[in-house]
Amino acid sequence: MIVCHCMVVNDTAITDAVDAGATTLAEVCRSTGAGTDCGGCVFSVKAIVCNHDVFRARTMDDLRALATDVSLDEEPIRAAS
Ligand code: FES
Image (cartoon, rainbow, N blue to C red; front, side, top):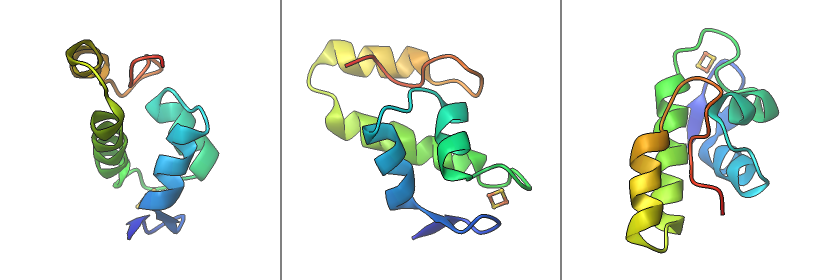
């Protein structure tokens, strides 16, 4: 599914960026190009990253960390693994 129409980035590219080590929304956007033009897709990108991490979470502590780490700035958007 295309998430960023400006830069033609799909959801797989976004989850691949997370799996490759991107730990902030800014890193995901920089590495994929998503969100770097009009910015209209940034919240969709963020939702995909969060959902991807929820499925990867193994403990309640992982989920608690996700709930407190979601941010649009350079702060980590997921718990370090
Ligand atoms: S839709 Fe992603 S930057 Fe415009």
